[in-house]
Length: 287
Ligand SMILES: [Zn+2]
Image 1 (cartoon, rainbow, N blue to C red):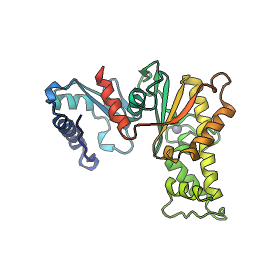
Image 2: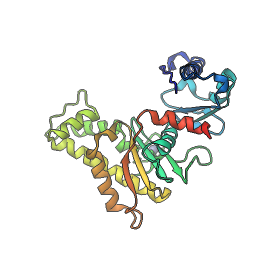
Image 3: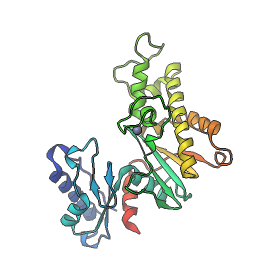
Image 4: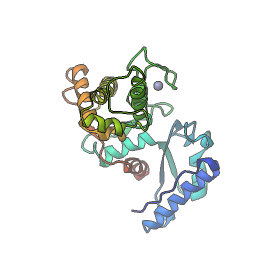
């Protein structure tokens, strides 16, 4: 196995990004001692939205230069191998179900809590895409119908409450005068700082985890009612908070989950870290 790693040169435009991806593929092949010509295929996990059927990047927020780029075609030209492109959250789920937390189950959902809330759904061992590639947009189930407007157009989406970014924003909002008694300061506020404060007994910080877990549990009830998965794995920085986040999430799920379903669902930490997406993308072309 080989691995090439380079920062994405977003500021230099699409040509530079495509070239860098191709260079990484060549580097990984070389490191792995395999001629690129002998590689069966190349799988790409990219931020979405994108079209996984055509391999076209649509409009990822943090990569404006890639909007509309036909990535599959461009890489196939440059590398002379067959390429498949899919959403990075889908790839993380596909990897986790193959070799990580979900390797013993066939019905699996992975929810990544990062700057947003992403996810991927594997049903009966198959990655689910939907008609235009937007299945398992788990961050956009409503958890508060009177909540704030989400960039997706809906209101009160899970992503507005349970991403790491949302948790920090909501904590900072609560701290505005006449704020609660807390050891936290608005400067340098991160989920890690909230976690450390919670661990050292700060009741306000503990309440923020409790609340975030509650929203997550409410979202997972809806997701499980639609997907009937047997396992939900939580990934991303916020999942590293362990019981602080898992306990309120599981408790809320048990309070509200459908009888006959809730007893069988496991909510567990993802196991593969950053490698989940790489392995998922490899699995796309491994079959
Ligand atoms: Zn939304």
